[in-house]
Length: 199
Image (tube, helix red, strand yellow):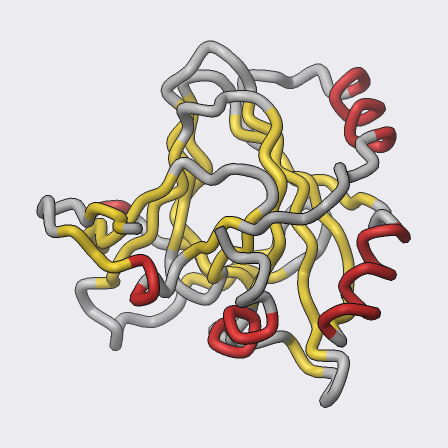
């Protein structure tokens, strides 16, 4: 399997350091997501929400992969809208597991920062989680994927979302923790542990 880079080069899937699609044998419980969707009224603007983690998923990850979940979030990207370019937290390695609902033609895009020595623009989300914000003119696009559900994504590389559709994009996102050393799960470790369910 191959993914295409912005320059048109075919990248072997095993070299993909950005996202991997997973085959998980059951669906995520979306009860809380549906509640958020029905109550959120500012549909023209992106937002992030806290969400409880599905205990069935937590048990599955712990039992089969020795992976814990630190917390869950929901990211909303409006129709014809974007989620700004950012990295999660302040530069630590971080792997997330994402499920996407709606806007299946939307893309998550990863970027390379043109000047890595430029001071970081540190921010906090409305729910108090840290991130670093980047301007588009300071970045070059290096990879994109129409993320399907579920997937693991590398949130330590600058990334954003473009939603060209007429439908809102809802992303349920779990921050993964290495259950052995109790630190944020690194990308290569995640790929290794999930290797039998990567599709």
